Image 1 (cartoon, helix red, strand yellow):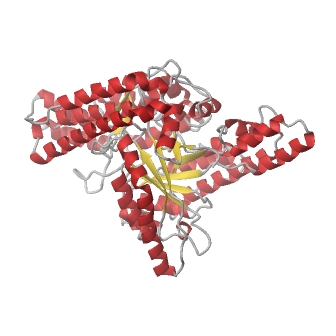
Image 2 (cartoon, one colour; image 1 turned 180 degrees about the vertical axis):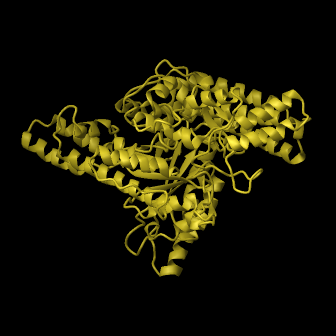
Image 3 (tube, one colour; image 1 turned 90 degrees about the horizontal axis):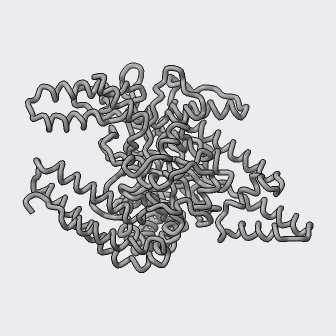
Length: 596
């Protein structure tokens, strides 16, 4: 690929059309297809903007969710291909997109070197030859698609009868991708869903034939080696190859935070580095045996990439990760929320983000999924949530129902962020006779839930001026804590140059190393877990907390040993890294679990 970084999925709507903004420059990005409503509305918007006939796919249409996904992904491919075709016709003049394409490339890129050679060529005929060559080297960034495996609500027909497994949310989204014209990567995130993984195997696009590798690729977003191997073996037994393991920090990321049992990013990357070769051999033997048995073909061993994302903030960190851990690329997510050219952040939220400090970003219980969620205190959705509580009407109307899961009070699942659930839960709480302090704690836990289905798409509607008159204008946003250190609105050129070390957007900013930032998050997470468990500790919980603490201490020791290697790449952090690491180690040792 042209670039060694990608832009991960950002909420439901923030990166919904990012490929239309960056793919022509060779930058890969990820689109979420969880919400078929925003998918359909953005298809209408971009069809109309580009003069393409649009026919609505209604919710009453059969298999509408899959059809909406397919239609939108096909539109993205058509529009990006058109952009690339137009790019190839442009002259190499200052300010042209074709010039920008090559200016954005990293210095080590072969195409970049050829471009510089062309600029310095004085012979016009040779310059023309070089320009023709450069036009052949234009690569489109991948249009990748993300499915949250566990967001897989079952759906029902008009008669109330279940439609069947293949019409669940995740399986319908998968079918939409599988039936599209895109030959790109499907990212499976948020844990293993055996039903979904088995369904992938039913589509030929994910399988190779005797001479050609699979057209559609699989990527697993993972937070530790063990779960990655378990999932990949499950898929290999069905003849499916994981083309990339996309490792994400458990807590130092945007969106949902999947806290590992104290396993820190550095040790996790080390395990992948040490076991990579053996893992690939093991998976290939399973994969090869399946295809030999099922179709009688000898499949070649596909290449497997390993990349990392979550909390990367400097070119030094970016380079260190790739070189020391032998990684094939990195993901830069939250910083791109401050790049209007690349993402859908409305102007009000953009200004709130750039002026925010570290305290404005926190791991919350806002997600109806019951998974820790990176939240932003200054978002308008958070302000609206508090306003509703003050008015005595906590909770949100539940129109989309993507995150319904709770059956505590109803036969059909409802969402814990909904007004219906919170009213019922508060009535239950009011019937108890508990101390005020405990009452307030439980009340806050109930009402902390946010409507993410609406909030995470609203910004895209506002920015593109397609918010309907009666729609909720409150914006929810889920940036990673790393966003606090980026304090301006940036151009695409500035952010890409920052990633490659041509420009330093954080000059003068007091920002700890990404490993230190993640460790701080884990220490705070453990402290909170200990506090919340104080009145209900049992042997099982004590052992879990102790294992967590031990893993953090193992991580501290690992980073102590790693420091000389970090120092080779990161001169700016060498003065503070060891001091902060030592202080955090002391804090961890001082944590008391139970009567210990």
